Image 1 (cartoon, helix red, strand yellow):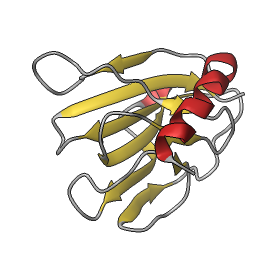
Image 2 (cartoon, one colour; image 1 turned 90 degrees about the vertical axis):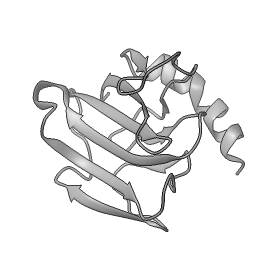
Image 3 (cartoon, rainbow, N blue to C red; image 1 turned 180 degrees about the vertical axis):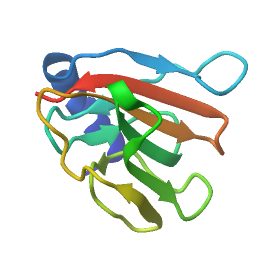
Length: 129
């Protein structure tokens, strides 16, 4: 399935099923790109975005942001394409943190996607249905 099509197809599900706000450009300077995290509302969501490949995807409980429960890191610069299912490993990426390979219903989490060599990040806080 085409990655762009995937991102658009989950957008409606995101709006209906996963509350929370998305913010852009946490770590970079200049004008933030127009982007948001698109995801399926489930205990094993698929994370999608539109602005370039990612270096790292990190998920933490909103109450303890400094302690990730799942993280995947690209083996090559900007090597993670949009459409990553939570808790999974993948081609050309490692999973150094995996304490919650399935998220807990009713708990608020934040996903952080670092892109473009670490200069831009997008986040979304959501509660698992």
